[in-house]
Length: 114
Length: 114
Image (cartoon, rainbow over all chains, first blue to last red; front, side, top):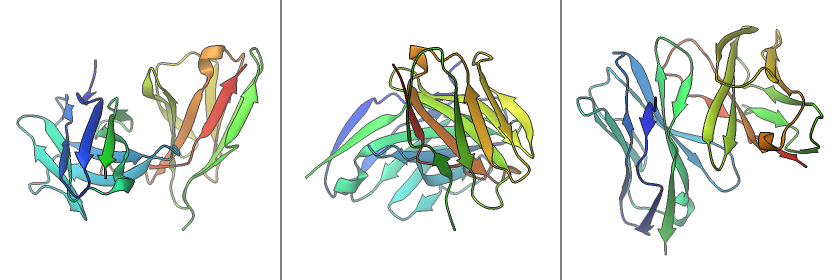
């Protein structure tokens, strides 16, 4: 069963605008972690931001913020002031406390338009 | 500090051969995970090692195997290669003790089967 769902295969955003990438997850565990990764065309996976299931405040890391809505089981990534270098694939991932396996979504391809 | 190092970066093999990929984790990281990434299937979890023991295993045939050494370096072996094994193989390391620890990825090994 799909544990992480990213419904947007591709997104476009104008440079300097904000963009939201959607992620929903499925688990009955109470303790879990949510992550976002960026994968440029060169292939490396870059860790962006983390949100714990017990964290009450939304995580922020520079221009990245995670809009965590626990009741809706969503963990959307918000990128503010988009830059051309933000063009990449973005993956949402979850790890359950009960295990050590990361579950990845299918990714969203973001293109920033000058 | 040095990141996750995967060798080789590129590899070309023919059907029926076997291959060994190497991964050196970030210093101090004891957990190493392997993923297969293909355009059609996305990121698929292969297995995870922690302190030389396989803790988790994905849904791959027995042709895919791995091991971890006492210095946390890990190798992945694929025997009797098939055309469908062509993929980017990513290794990721983490401290491994808590679900709030992100996995840090290497640049991957791109394996092509002719």
